[in-house]
Image (cartoon, rainbow over all chains, first blue to last red; front, side):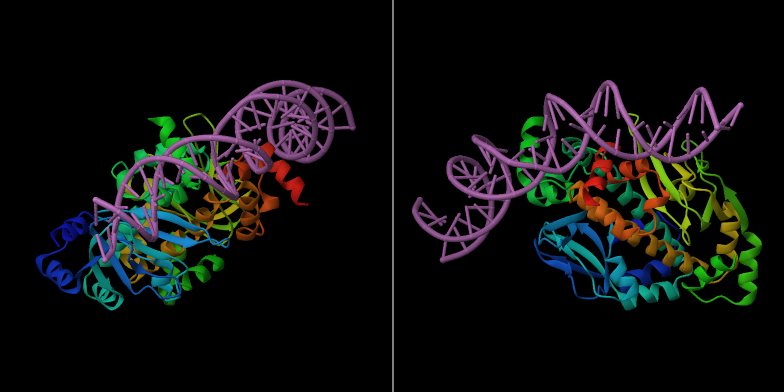
Length: 189
Length: 189
DNA sequence: GAAATTATTTGCCATATGACAAAAACTATT
DNA sequence: AATAGTTTTTGTCATATGGCAAATAATTTC
């Protein structure tokens, strides 16, 4: 829980009472490898924070291919934003790639934080901005490069992740086939 | 200016006084095709809203290639978020693709809106969320497809944009060469 | 409106990546 | 420890896309 508070305090000041309130509304939780945090067709009703582990966002293309759109690891908030904000069914999945320890906020509690803590919206805005910038920085360069360069950039941006995620997930994130990624890895080392 | 107010009111309610205050802080502005709204190396100090025209975000890769990372058209806010939020020099450019009519907020005025209008932060948060979701929805599907499919998806997502942007910009957005895009277009029609 | 500049198309060839299938290396389960 | 299941690697071949250069078309400038 301290991890969470410490993370939030980077984005704005909070007094002891406010911190207590946040802790009250937060719930510790866990997911085993492969379990889903939220699923396509359902409305996402919670916001997560990763204490330990890796999660991914994924979906299925019209050809039935499973595609990973994003990875996240420790010390990050995550949410299926479109579904959560607009209360519409999600089009994708949020899945644990490894066993995960999480902190979870229900939508009602998340709303209460906004209603109760002066400045909370601004903090959320900053967290959101930062997440957005990071995501875009990770995804943008992928398109314009060949597969080997994409993989090398992935290694730079996610230095600690390579050994924690299956090759097939990573391949679908990079937009290449598992075979190709396997060959690329061979060529590099 | 009504375009702007109407757009904002989608995201939250504002009284007449608040609307007046926003109008006061907003400034009409224009850019000619090719001109920059913000530039690499400089700190982005304004937020824009497109009344008419198309803008793009672009940058130069380490091989000197010019790469378009995003297009935006009418009825959208845009800002070099990382530079603006953190007051650090930008790494990219925001450029007018066509002649543009804009509404511009200086950083100080933008800040004043936040300080003065109760609920403004929440509205910004919603606008930001929506923009983020849209951007991700546009970019994510591109990676996993071949060039022809990427172009077709672009046509779907940006139905009105194709004839307004140069082929070379679009090619760099899709991550292919101008020659390839030219051939793809030929094959489709 | 002619000349100069810039943008797009086309041709040719090389090569990275995909598709499919089989083999090998891991992992999990009893 | 043996089996079954899954994931990763490797092989072969086909093809989409890139690189480069030249030709054509469109746009800008004087």
